[in-house]
Image (cartoon, rainbow, N blue to C red):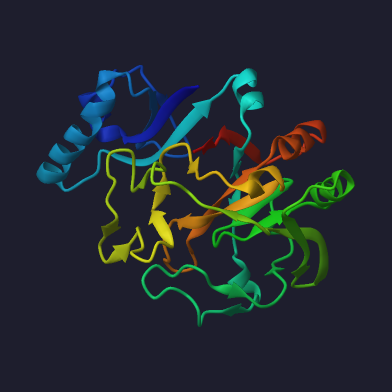
Length: 282
C-alpha cells in the first residue's frame, strides 16, 4: 500500500516550502491555491504544521485549507483482505431534511448529535442526485441507483436494506441504502481534525463523544475493526461509532464496510461512485 497526502496550499505562502514548478495550480477554479502531494516519508510533510503555526502567529492566516489522504493498493492486497472499507466518493445537496424527510430527534445524543431516527421515506429534490450508482447527501443519507439495487437483489447480498426514495414530484427510481448490521471500531482507528491535529474538540464542538458515539471529526487511518461473527455472515456493514459532527445539516456518519462479494459485484457490474480501502480486523 502507498499512502499519499494531498494538501491545498495557500499560493501566497507555497514558496516557503515548495518549488515554483511543484504541485498543481487550480487555474480558473482558484488562482490562490496550489495542490501538492507528499508521502509521510518526505521530510517536508512534517514541516507543514510548523510553517502553518508560524503563518498563523504572524499573519493570522492559514498555510493550507483542504487536504485528503489517498491510499493505493495492489490488486493482490485488495483481493487478500476479508473486509473492505467502502468509500462513497460523491456528496450532494440538498439533504433529506430540507426536502421533507421526517426525523425523530428525541433520542439524539445531547453531546455529539448522533443517532437520530428516520421516520419517513427519504425525500429528495428531483434532479439533485448525481449520475452515479452511489452517492450521499451532506447529511449522510446514502442513495443508490436502480441498477445497483437490482444487482444486489440478483446476487442475494446480505446485510443491507433498500428503500424507495420519493422526489418532490413523485416516486423516483433511486433507493436509500442502509446497513442492517453494525461492527465496532477498535481504539487503533485514528480520527482527528487533519493529519497534524488529533484534537477531540474545537470552538465548542465535540468531535469525540464521551458516550462513545463519535471518535473524531475525520477518519485519518485505515479503519480497524473488532472481529465479529457477523463479518462472515453479511456483505454490508456500518460502524457502530461515527465520525464528523453535528453542524447545521451535517450529522455524524458511520463508516461503511463490505465483503469481497460486494466488491466483486461493483467491478463486474461496472458500478460507479465507489472506492475501496483495506479494513483491518483485530
